[in-house]
Amino acid sequence: MGVLCCNFLRSYAGYQTSLLGVYLADRAAGSVSGSGIFLRLFERRGVWFLLYLISGVTPFGIPLVLGGLLWLGFLGGNLLTVFLMEYGIRGIGAALACFFPQGLFYVPSVLLFFFFIVQMSQKYWGKGIRVKADYRAYLFFMTGIGILFLLALFMESYVNQNVLSFVIERFL
Image (cartoon, rainbow, N blue to C red; front, top):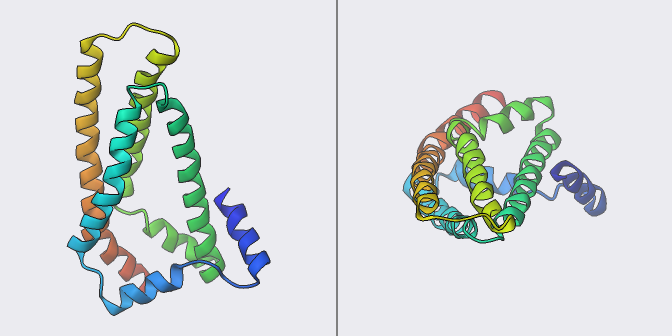
């Protein structure tokens, strides 16, 4: 979906419509600090984490997870397309560098996060019995997933920008 949208925007506007150049110019100026990135990501993604966490104990968890999966697919496809259109085949490697090393934490944590939300939300759809042990297990696993999210945020804030700068300087 993201690939199609990016291609349609380019053909409709007649020029590149991404913000990739703005991001790279901002990174080259060195105006973004690791702690600033961490706080901004924590604020933005923390709100979504809490929204999804709460939705897991309601019947709205399953539709939110489906929407979240579609949105992540759109963003991933759009990112790959933007790098491919800007830099050609070499851009695919740079796009993959955008996911390293935080992707090692994000991918399992997002999959587990969505899995547990769907499991808990299904009890409302199927009129299953909900007991205190279900809620305790849900909070226990969500706490562990929250720790994985924090590790991914840390990696994205402090480590990824160095990896991405290295890849851009050397290969693009």
